[in-house]
Length: 210
Image (cartoon, rainbow, N blue to C red; front, side, top):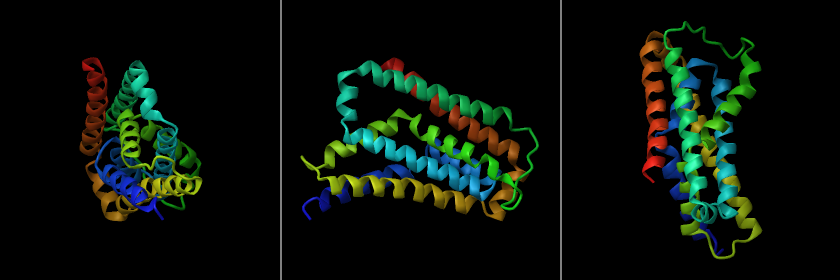
């Protein structure tokens, strides 16, 4: 299969990007330790769908569009930065609020769609992820990829994104990390919220320098 080296190159580059800490990791980590394991996994699935959206956009020529319309990229950076900062502010503001952690059998499933949407929106709110996908695809894609290649690539993107964040959710939703979170909730939330706000502000400020 002549397209196999290209597929391996894309997946290897994206895997390195996915496992690198960022806003998505912070959100999944907090969701996993502060809610149920199911909520963490739902958010991880949302991350996977966000990755698929970026992959589809990259296949359709996202990089060319952003290069042709620079103002669109600036708009995405500002909007994404504001959203990340808003999420961080909400986490920071609720740091002192008492939290009752739900178990798997406590009926917390009603919030699963909300966790899924939170994961999805957090993923797509970071325009740098879009640029990573566009750049990696531009560097490794064959000139005329087949339909089968595109299908396998999109499927693997979902597995990488959802799989990695599912691992994070499963690891951090176990009893020991959860007990530690409840003990140090105020400090952990302030750190997590502060990181999210800084990442959001960094995006907004970088758009002004562009």
